[in-house]
Amino acid sequence: MSMSKFDEILNRIYICSLPDSEDLERVLSSQDAEELESLFNFADAVRKKFCGDGIFLRGIIEFSNFCAKECFYCGLNKNNHKLNRYRMTDEELLKSVEYLVYSNIKTIVLQSGEEPAGDALWLADIIRRIKSNSDLAVTLCVGERSLDDYKLWREAGADRYLLKIETTDEALYSSMHPKMKLARRLDCLDILRQLGYQVGSGNMIGLPGQSLKSIARDIIFFKQGNFDMIGIGPFIPHQDTPFSGQPGGQAALTLKALALTRIVTRNAHLPATTALGSLGQDYRRQGLKCGANVLMPNFTPQPYRKLYQIYPGKKCIDEPVGVCNFCMDGMAGDIGRFIDYSKGDSLKFGKVNLNV
Ligand code: SAM
Image 1 (cartoon, rainbow, N blue to C red):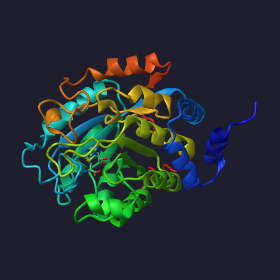
Image 2 (image 1 turned 90 degrees about the vertical axis):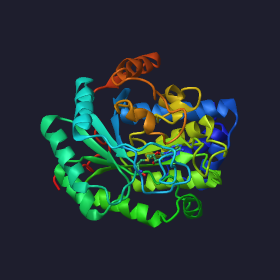
Image 3 (image 1 turned 60 degrees about the vertical axis):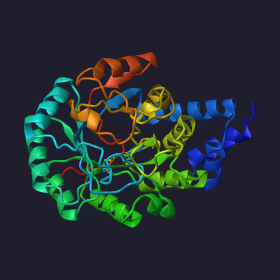
Image 4 (image 1 turned 180 degrees about the vertical axis):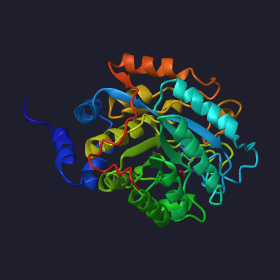
């Protein structure tokens, strides 16, 4: 049977060294059920070939919701005075780490709002204590910081860093990030890579003013950046932000972007993001079936979990710590996959330099 035009486009996107923006836009704009089935099956086959059937777990602890930034989409932005702010104590944080280890998870993600002057030495000490008491891979997600801070944390034992670019469209980026520069974010990603971190980035889908061309450029950027991890989630409007009342990102477009990112990056770790699971319906299963190979169970204890309100309707916000494993095992089993309880280091051969 001869290949359809759409399959030809998918194949071209897969084999070329840098995908063509028009090809990506054509796929992103498709509303045709048969075409979308081809796309998702293609992405699933690429995932199987380059990543296998295992789903890696990253246990996330949101240790502080203080933030000095003013991102228009985020509920943590410093101008949201309705939000009660918290910072977990060392004891609370390390207790949560124990739960995570007890749950057999091998990667911890320490996330917080962005505080450029936040206590770097404190975080270095926490990293050291985690590394000396466990065999966890430590991922940080605390935003833009100085070279010295990134270096300090790397030397303390941090293995990975997540810094989403949110959008590669400079004008769009500036329109929603007061006093921030896209170039600075790009510099941070370079520095993190030079320091030997496994580096993750990502974007949001459905940001106000975002075009398909802009999403296509993000996907090209993900390919060029050869990232170890890429998080793609829908924008979900928060009532206490400047983007209150804006339409949110659609699951369908998010899944298309995720599938294309799998096809172009081949073996990057791609989570079925919590935001994808928080759209009324839980779309993480679909995400896992069109390219994703990672889930991120939440280990932030109550009452803090409820206060880490980056967007409303966040998945599992009322649940106690420790119930995630059953759910994740169930989700994997439902789709004929399994949870891989290993660390799940980067699959980008030869890029991992742990001896800084
Ligand atoms: N501030 C740190 C940073 O920028 O890397 C980490 C914390 S930030 C809250 C984590 C991620 O939340 C962001 O990268 C962004 O993609 C996501 N996020 C924030 N607000 C969101 C919203 N309204 N809808 C969906 N995702 C959102």
